[in-house]
Image (tube, rainbow, N blue to C red; front, side, top):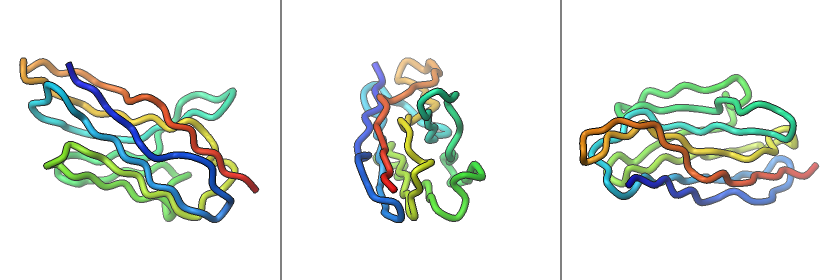
Length: 120
């Protein structure tokens, strides 16, 4: 079994910062691309940022210049540093990881969502 455990999130005023963490644990052999997605009420889930195991990053326009994705391969953990938060960043944020288990089976995994609320 592979689990993604998310921490961080919460309530912050506009202009503030938050840091999300997501750790892959359990029967993990290797972790490929990891990323963050978000879903606001009444909207579809959208990409925020992704990062490969070699550190190549990709950001959605909404995240460029304000959010930074990083990872610690030794800890199978991905982070999302969010600065200059805006009310439109309010959403449930989800972690994703492409994982090969110790059984050498590949799967996409999602962590539990974490609520980020930005007040104006």
